Length: 422
Image 1 (tube, rainbow, N blue to C red):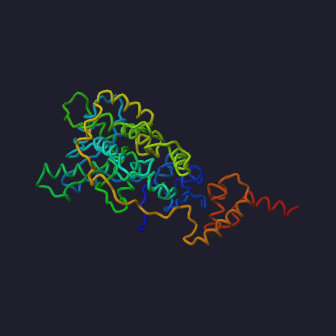
Image 2: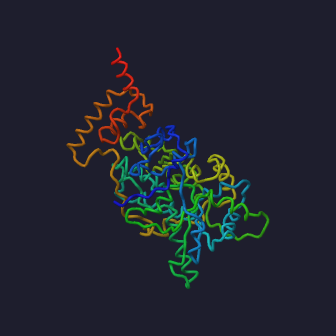
Protein backbone atom coordinates (compact mmCIF):
# COMPACT_ATOMS: atom_id res chain seq x y z
CA UNK A 1 0.00 0.00 0.00
CA UNK A 2 1.04 3.68 -0.30
CA UNK A 3 3.05 5.29 2.48
CA UNK A 4 0.85 6.30 5.39
CA UNK A 5 1.05 10.03 6.12
CA UNK A 6 1.16 10.73 9.85
CA UNK A 7 0.14 13.75 11.91
CA UNK A 8 2.24 12.98 15.01
CA UNK A 9 5.81 14.10 14.38
CA UNK A 10 9.08 14.41 16.30
CA UNK A 11 10.97 17.65 16.83
CA UNK A 12 14.46 16.19 17.04
CA UNK A 13 15.95 19.45 18.35
CA UNK A 14 13.91 19.15 21.57
CA UNK A 15 14.32 15.40 22.12
CA UNK A 16 16.77 14.32 24.86
CA UNK A 17 16.25 10.57 24.49
CA UNK A 18 14.71 10.34 27.97
CA UNK A 19 12.67 7.17 27.10
CA UNK A 20 9.33 8.51 28.46
CA UNK A 21 7.66 8.08 25.08
CA UNK A 22 9.43 4.76 24.56
CA UNK A 23 7.74 3.22 27.58
CA UNK A 24 4.24 4.51 26.82
CA UNK A 25 3.85 3.88 23.09
CA UNK A 26 1.05 1.28 22.73
CA UNK A 27 2.46 -0.27 19.55
CA UNK A 28 6.18 -0.08 20.44
CA UNK A 29 6.67 2.25 17.49
CA UNK A 30 9.44 4.28 19.18
CA UNK A 31 13.14 3.50 19.61
CA UNK A 32 15.98 5.61 20.99
CA UNK A 33 18.91 5.85 18.58
CA UNK A 34 21.92 8.17 18.82
CA UNK A 35 20.35 9.90 21.81
CA UNK A 36 17.03 10.74 20.13
CA UNK A 37 13.64 9.09 19.62
CA UNK A 38 12.85 7.54 16.25
CA UNK A 39 9.26 6.75 15.23
CA UNK A 40 8.53 3.69 13.10
CA UNK A 41 5.86 4.94 10.66
CA UNK A 42 4.49 1.47 9.99
CA UNK A 43 3.63 1.00 13.67
CA UNK A 44 2.49 4.51 14.65
CA UNK A 45 -1.29 4.89 15.11
CA UNK A 46 -1.27 8.68 15.76
CA UNK A 47 -2.80 8.22 19.19
CA UNK A 48 -0.88 11.20 20.56
CA UNK A 49 0.20 9.36 23.71
CA UNK A 50 3.82 10.41 23.13
CA UNK A 51 2.69 14.04 22.83
CA UNK A 52 0.76 13.74 26.07
CA UNK A 53 3.65 12.39 28.17
CA UNK A 54 6.77 13.96 26.59
CA UNK A 55 8.32 16.26 29.23
CA UNK A 56 10.21 18.25 26.58
CA UNK A 57 7.38 18.84 24.08
CA UNK A 58 9.47 17.05 21.46
CA UNK A 59 6.41 15.35 19.95
CA UNK A 60 3.84 17.48 18.20
CA UNK A 61 0.58 17.17 16.29
CA UNK A 62 0.63 18.66 12.81
CA UNK A 63 -2.71 19.84 11.46
CA UNK A 64 -3.93 22.13 8.69
CA UNK A 65 -4.05 25.91 8.82
CA UNK A 66 -7.21 27.98 8.73
CA UNK A 67 -5.68 30.16 6.00
CA UNK A 68 -5.75 27.13 3.70
CA UNK A 69 -9.53 27.53 3.51
CA UNK A 70 -9.13 30.79 1.58
CA UNK A 71 -8.83 28.81 -1.64
CA UNK A 72 -12.54 27.99 -1.48
CA UNK A 73 -15.41 30.31 -2.39
CA UNK A 74 -17.72 28.82 0.24
CA UNK A 75 -16.35 27.66 3.58
CA UNK A 76 -18.10 25.28 5.99
CA UNK A 77 -17.01 24.62 9.58
CA UNK A 78 -17.57 21.23 11.20
CA UNK A 79 -17.11 21.75 14.95
CA UNK A 80 -16.47 18.62 16.99
CA UNK A 81 -18.72 18.52 20.09
CA UNK A 82 -15.53 18.66 22.18
CA UNK A 83 -15.18 22.30 21.10
CA UNK A 84 -18.13 23.36 23.26
CA UNK A 85 -16.44 22.11 26.42
CA UNK A 86 -13.46 24.43 25.99
CA UNK A 87 -15.26 27.62 27.05
CA UNK A 88 -16.01 28.68 30.59
CA UNK A 89 -19.58 29.71 31.50
CA UNK A 90 -20.95 28.78 28.06
CA UNK A 91 -24.72 28.50 28.35
CA UNK A 92 -25.65 28.44 24.68
CA UNK A 93 -23.93 26.53 21.86
CA UNK A 94 -25.08 29.20 19.42
CA UNK A 95 -22.40 31.56 20.78
CA UNK A 96 -19.78 29.14 19.43
CA UNK A 97 -21.55 28.46 16.16
CA UNK A 98 -22.21 32.14 15.52
CA UNK A 99 -18.59 32.89 16.39
CA UNK A 100 -17.44 30.51 13.65
CA UNK A 101 -19.37 32.51 11.06
CA UNK A 102 -17.76 35.69 12.35
CA UNK A 103 -14.23 34.37 11.86
CA UNK A 104 -14.84 33.66 8.20
CA UNK A 105 -17.00 30.58 7.70
CA UNK A 106 -20.07 30.85 5.48
CA UNK A 107 -21.88 27.96 7.14
CA UNK A 108 -21.61 25.68 10.16
CA UNK A 109 -22.68 22.04 10.33
CA UNK A 110 -22.48 20.42 13.75
CA UNK A 111 -20.72 17.08 13.97
CA UNK A 112 -22.96 16.43 16.98
CA UNK A 113 -25.96 16.57 14.62
CA UNK A 114 -24.38 13.91 12.41
CA UNK A 115 -23.55 11.91 15.56
CA UNK A 116 -27.25 11.70 16.39
CA UNK A 117 -27.96 10.34 12.91
CA UNK A 118 -25.13 7.82 13.21
CA UNK A 119 -26.47 6.72 16.61
CA UNK A 120 -29.93 6.19 15.13
CA UNK A 121 -28.59 4.07 12.28
CA UNK A 122 -26.29 2.14 14.62
CA UNK A 123 -29.39 1.05 16.53
CA UNK A 124 -30.71 -0.37 13.27
CA UNK A 125 -27.34 -1.91 12.39
CA UNK A 126 -27.35 -3.86 15.66
CA UNK A 127 -30.57 -5.57 14.57
CA UNK A 128 -28.99 -6.81 11.33
CA UNK A 129 -28.81 -10.59 11.08
CA UNK A 130 -25.43 -12.21 10.70
CA UNK A 131 -23.25 -9.45 12.12
CA UNK A 132 -20.50 -10.50 14.51
CA UNK A 133 -20.88 -9.27 18.06
CA UNK A 134 -19.77 -7.53 20.11
CA UNK A 135 -19.83 -4.77 17.55
CA UNK A 136 -16.86 -2.41 17.96
CA UNK A 137 -17.36 1.26 17.13
CA UNK A 138 -15.44 2.63 14.14
CA UNK A 139 -15.66 6.26 15.29
CA UNK A 140 -12.12 6.47 16.71
CA UNK A 141 -9.55 6.14 13.88
CA UNK A 142 -6.84 5.22 16.40
CA UNK A 143 -8.81 2.17 17.51
CA UNK A 144 -9.52 1.04 13.94
CA UNK A 145 -5.84 1.32 12.99
CA UNK A 146 -4.83 -0.44 16.22
CA UNK A 147 -7.15 -3.36 15.43
CA UNK A 148 -5.79 -3.61 11.90
CA UNK A 149 -2.18 -3.65 13.10
CA UNK A 150 -2.38 -5.60 16.34
CA UNK A 151 -5.76 -7.39 16.51
CA UNK A 152 -6.59 -8.38 12.90
CA UNK A 153 -8.81 -11.23 14.11
CA UNK A 154 -11.29 -8.60 15.33
CA UNK A 155 -11.79 -7.03 11.87
CA UNK A 156 -15.19 -8.68 11.52
CA UNK A 157 -16.38 -7.00 14.73
CA UNK A 158 -15.86 -3.46 13.46
CA UNK A 159 -19.00 -1.43 12.78
CA UNK A 160 -19.03 -0.48 9.08
CA UNK A 161 -20.50 2.95 9.80
CA UNK A 162 -18.76 6.15 8.74
CA UNK A 163 -17.77 8.41 11.65
CA UNK A 164 -19.93 11.50 12.34
CA UNK A 165 -17.23 13.79 10.91
CA UNK A 166 -17.63 12.19 7.48
CA UNK A 167 -21.43 12.12 7.62
CA UNK A 168 -21.41 15.80 8.59
CA UNK A 169 -19.04 16.66 5.72
CA UNK A 170 -21.30 15.01 3.16
CA UNK A 171 -24.53 16.48 4.49
CA UNK A 172 -22.97 19.95 4.80
CA UNK A 173 -21.79 19.86 1.20
CA UNK A 174 -25.20 18.65 -0.01
CA UNK A 175 -26.96 21.42 1.89
CA UNK A 176 -24.64 24.07 0.47
CA UNK A 177 -25.20 22.89 -3.11
CA UNK A 178 -28.96 22.89 -2.58
CA UNK A 179 -29.05 26.36 -1.02
CA UNK A 180 -26.54 27.83 -3.46
CA UNK A 181 -27.08 26.27 -6.91
CA UNK A 182 -24.54 28.68 -8.37
CA UNK A 183 -21.77 26.79 -6.55
CA UNK A 184 -19.89 23.76 -7.79
CA UNK A 185 -18.68 21.06 -5.45
CA UNK A 186 -15.07 22.18 -5.88
CA UNK A 187 -16.04 25.69 -4.74
CA UNK A 188 -16.99 24.35 -1.31
CA UNK A 189 -14.40 23.77 1.39
CA UNK A 190 -15.20 21.70 4.47
CA UNK A 191 -13.08 22.23 7.59
CA UNK A 192 -13.23 19.92 10.61
CA UNK A 193 -12.25 21.49 13.96
CA UNK A 194 -10.59 18.60 15.76
CA UNK A 195 -9.26 17.66 19.19
CA UNK A 196 -7.41 14.70 17.69
CA UNK A 197 -4.35 14.25 15.42
CA UNK A 198 -5.64 10.88 14.21
CA UNK A 199 -8.47 12.69 12.40
CA UNK A 200 -5.82 14.64 10.48
CA UNK A 201 -4.21 11.38 9.37
CA UNK A 202 -7.62 9.93 8.51
CA UNK A 203 -8.34 12.82 6.13
CA UNK A 204 -4.85 12.79 4.61
CA UNK A 205 -4.82 9.06 3.88
CA UNK A 206 -8.47 8.26 3.26
CA UNK A 207 -10.03 5.08 4.59
CA UNK A 208 -9.41 2.03 2.39
CA UNK A 209 -11.63 2.63 -0.68
CA UNK A 210 -13.21 5.76 0.83
CA UNK A 211 -11.83 9.26 0.24
CA UNK A 212 -12.64 11.75 2.97
CA UNK A 213 -14.99 14.60 2.08
CA UNK A 214 -13.21 16.87 4.57
CA UNK A 215 -10.80 19.28 2.91
CA UNK A 216 -8.96 20.62 5.94
CA UNK A 217 -8.53 19.69 9.61
CA UNK A 218 -7.55 22.42 12.06
CA UNK A 219 -6.93 21.95 15.76
CA UNK A 220 -9.15 23.29 18.51
CA UNK A 221 -6.05 25.00 19.92
CA UNK A 222 -5.64 27.00 16.70
CA UNK A 223 -9.28 28.10 16.57
CA UNK A 224 -9.84 28.73 20.29
CA UNK A 225 -8.47 32.26 20.65
CA UNK A 226 -10.04 33.41 17.38
CA UNK A 227 -13.40 32.32 18.71
CA UNK A 228 -12.92 33.87 22.15
CA UNK A 229 -12.52 37.27 20.51
CA UNK A 230 -15.82 36.89 18.62
CA UNK A 231 -18.02 35.24 21.25
CA UNK A 232 -19.40 38.38 22.86
CA UNK A 233 -22.26 37.53 25.21
CA UNK A 234 -25.33 39.69 24.98
CA UNK A 235 -24.98 40.53 21.31
CA UNK A 236 -27.40 39.32 18.66
CA UNK A 237 -26.47 35.81 17.58
CA UNK A 238 -27.85 33.46 14.96
CA UNK A 239 -29.82 30.40 16.06
CA UNK A 240 -27.81 27.59 14.48
CA UNK A 241 -27.79 24.68 16.93
CA UNK A 242 -29.47 21.54 15.52
CA UNK A 243 -28.34 18.87 17.97
CA UNK A 244 -29.12 17.70 21.48
CA UNK A 245 -27.83 15.72 24.43
CA UNK A 246 -27.16 12.57 22.41
CA UNK A 247 -24.92 14.35 19.90
CA UNK A 248 -23.03 16.43 22.46
CA UNK A 249 -22.56 13.27 24.55
CA UNK A 250 -20.26 11.80 21.90
CA UNK A 251 -17.49 14.10 23.16
CA UNK A 252 -17.10 12.03 26.34
CA UNK A 253 -16.48 8.34 26.86
CA UNK A 254 -19.75 6.40 27.00
CA UNK A 255 -21.73 8.97 25.02
CA UNK A 256 -21.86 6.92 21.84
CA UNK A 257 -22.63 3.67 23.67
CA UNK A 258 -25.51 5.04 25.74
CA UNK A 259 -27.08 6.46 22.56
CA UNK A 260 -27.79 2.96 21.23
CA UNK A 261 -30.40 2.48 24.01
CA UNK A 262 -29.06 -0.97 24.83
CA UNK A 263 -27.70 -1.93 28.25
CA UNK A 264 -25.37 -4.62 26.87
CA UNK A 265 -22.48 -2.31 26.09
CA UNK A 266 -18.99 -1.51 27.29
CA UNK A 267 -17.21 1.84 27.04
CA UNK A 268 -13.48 2.25 27.69
CA UNK A 269 -11.13 5.17 27.24
CA UNK A 270 -7.36 5.62 27.41
CA UNK A 271 -5.15 3.62 25.06
CA UNK A 272 -3.95 1.13 27.70
CA UNK A 273 -7.53 0.33 28.74
CA UNK A 274 -8.52 0.00 25.09
CA UNK A 275 -5.76 -2.56 24.53
CA UNK A 276 -6.81 -4.57 27.60
CA UNK A 277 -10.40 -4.70 26.35
CA UNK A 278 -9.36 -5.78 22.85
CA UNK A 279 -7.13 -8.50 24.29
CA UNK A 280 -10.05 -9.86 26.29
CA UNK A 281 -12.40 -9.72 23.30
CA UNK A 282 -9.83 -11.53 21.17
CA UNK A 283 -9.41 -14.22 23.86
CA UNK A 284 -13.18 -14.58 24.33
CA UNK A 285 -12.77 -13.59 27.98
CA UNK A 286 -15.56 -11.03 28.09
CA UNK A 287 -19.30 -11.11 28.93
CA UNK A 288 -21.95 -11.24 26.23
CA UNK A 289 -22.10 -7.71 24.86
CA UNK A 290 -23.86 -6.07 21.95
CA UNK A 291 -21.65 -3.01 21.50
CA UNK A 292 -18.21 -1.76 22.51
CA UNK A 293 -17.21 1.90 22.40
CA UNK A 294 -13.46 2.52 22.59
CA UNK A 295 -11.73 5.90 22.76
CA UNK A 296 -7.94 6.14 22.64
CA UNK A 297 -7.89 9.44 24.51
CA UNK A 298 -8.51 9.59 28.28
CA UNK A 299 -12.07 10.67 28.95
CA UNK A 300 -12.97 10.31 25.26
CA UNK A 301 -12.52 12.97 22.59
CA UNK A 302 -12.38 15.66 25.30
CA UNK A 303 -8.94 14.22 26.12
CA UNK A 304 -7.50 14.81 22.65
CA UNK A 305 -4.05 16.41 22.57
CA UNK A 306 -5.25 19.16 20.20
CA UNK A 307 -7.88 20.36 22.69
CA UNK A 308 -7.26 23.30 25.00
CA UNK A 309 -8.77 22.35 28.32
CA UNK A 310 -8.28 19.63 30.91
CA UNK A 311 -10.58 16.77 29.77
CA UNK A 312 -12.31 16.47 33.13
CA UNK A 313 -13.10 20.18 33.22
CA UNK A 314 -14.32 20.04 29.61
CA UNK A 315 -16.53 17.05 30.45
CA UNK A 316 -18.03 18.88 33.45
CA UNK A 317 -18.77 21.91 31.25
CA UNK A 318 -20.52 19.73 28.69
CA UNK A 319 -22.60 18.09 31.41
CA UNK A 320 -23.76 21.52 32.53
CA UNK A 321 -24.44 22.61 28.97
CA UNK A 322 -26.59 19.55 28.23
CA UNK A 323 -29.19 20.66 30.79
CA UNK A 324 -30.34 23.32 28.32
CA UNK A 325 -30.70 20.93 25.36
CA UNK A 326 -33.34 18.48 24.14
CA UNK A 327 -32.46 14.78 24.08
CA UNK A 328 -32.06 14.84 20.31
CA UNK A 329 -33.11 16.93 17.33
CA UNK A 330 -32.32 14.20 14.80
CA UNK A 331 -34.10 11.08 15.99
CA UNK A 332 -34.92 8.42 13.37
CA UNK A 333 -37.74 6.16 14.47
CA UNK A 334 -38.18 2.54 13.42
CA UNK A 335 -41.01 3.50 11.08
CA UNK A 336 -39.02 6.20 9.25
CA UNK A 337 -36.62 3.95 7.35
CA UNK A 338 -36.23 0.20 7.47
CA UNK A 339 -32.76 0.33 5.95
CA UNK A 340 -29.49 2.18 6.47
CA UNK A 341 -28.63 4.50 3.56
CA UNK A 342 -25.51 3.38 1.72
CA UNK A 343 -23.98 6.82 2.18
CA UNK A 344 -23.59 6.11 5.91
CA UNK A 345 -21.56 2.94 5.40
CA UNK A 346 -18.08 2.01 4.20
CA UNK A 347 -17.31 -1.21 2.36
CA UNK A 348 -13.68 -2.03 3.03
CA UNK A 349 -11.28 -1.73 5.93
CA UNK A 350 -7.70 -0.55 5.39
CA UNK A 351 -5.25 -3.42 4.93
CA UNK A 352 -2.03 -3.19 6.92
CA UNK A 353 0.65 -5.70 7.68
CA UNK A 354 0.10 -6.89 11.28
CA UNK A 355 2.97 -5.67 13.45
CA UNK A 356 3.32 -9.07 15.15
CA UNK A 357 4.07 -10.84 11.87
CA UNK A 358 7.79 -11.60 11.66
CA UNK A 359 7.81 -12.78 8.05
CA UNK A 360 5.45 -13.58 5.20
CA UNK A 361 6.94 -17.08 5.23
CA UNK A 362 5.59 -19.30 8.00
CA UNK A 363 8.77 -21.41 8.36
CA UNK A 364 10.92 -18.29 8.51
CA UNK A 365 8.57 -16.77 11.12
CA UNK A 366 8.85 -19.87 13.33
CA UNK A 367 12.64 -19.81 13.08
CA UNK A 368 12.79 -16.12 13.96
CA UNK A 369 10.40 -16.60 16.88
CA UNK A 370 12.59 -19.37 18.26
CA UNK A 371 15.70 -17.17 17.97
CA UNK A 372 13.90 -14.28 19.69
CA UNK A 373 12.88 -16.51 22.61
CA UNK A 374 16.42 -17.84 23.01
CA UNK A 375 17.90 -14.36 23.07
CA UNK A 376 15.15 -13.12 25.39
CA UNK A 377 16.11 -15.76 27.95
CA UNK A 378 19.66 -14.36 28.07
CA UNK A 379 18.51 -10.80 28.74
CA UNK A 380 17.91 -9.43 32.28
CA UNK A 381 14.14 -8.92 31.77
CA UNK A 382 13.93 -5.59 33.60
CA UNK A 383 12.75 -3.58 30.55
CA UNK A 384 14.95 -0.62 31.48
CA UNK A 385 15.00 0.89 27.97
CA UNK A 386 18.76 1.58 28.07
CA UNK A 387 19.17 -0.41 24.84
CA UNK A 388 16.79 1.97 23.05
CA UNK A 389 13.91 -0.54 22.89
CA UNK A 390 10.87 -0.48 25.22
CA UNK A 391 11.25 -4.04 26.49
CA UNK A 392 13.78 -6.87 26.46
CA UNK A 393 11.40 -8.78 24.18
CA UNK A 394 11.33 -5.85 21.73
CA UNK A 395 15.12 -5.58 21.82
CA UNK A 396 15.48 -9.30 21.09
CA UNK A 397 13.15 -8.93 18.12
CA UNK A 398 15.11 -5.92 16.85
CA UNK A 399 18.34 -7.94 17.02
CA UNK A 400 16.90 -10.94 15.17
CA UNK A 401 15.36 -8.63 12.56
CA UNK A 402 18.84 -7.04 12.26
CA UNK A 403 17.50 -3.61 13.14
CA UNK A 404 19.98 -3.04 15.95
CA UNK A 405 23.37 -4.29 17.11
CA UNK A 406 23.51 -7.50 19.20
CA UNK A 407 25.63 -5.82 21.88
CA UNK A 408 23.08 -3.13 22.81
CA UNK A 409 22.13 -4.48 26.25
CA UNK A 410 24.32 -2.55 28.70
CA UNK A 411 23.50 -4.81 31.66
CA UNK A 412 24.37 -7.97 29.74
CA UNK A 413 27.54 -6.34 28.48
CA UNK A 414 28.50 -5.26 32.00
CA UNK A 415 27.97 -8.79 33.26
CA UNK A 416 30.18 -10.22 30.54
CA UNK A 417 32.91 -7.70 31.32
CA UNK A 418 32.75 -8.54 35.01
CA UNK A 419 33.02 -12.23 34.17
CA UNK A 420 36.09 -11.64 32.02
CA UNK A 421 37.78 -9.67 34.83
CA UNK A 422 37.27 -12.55 37.22
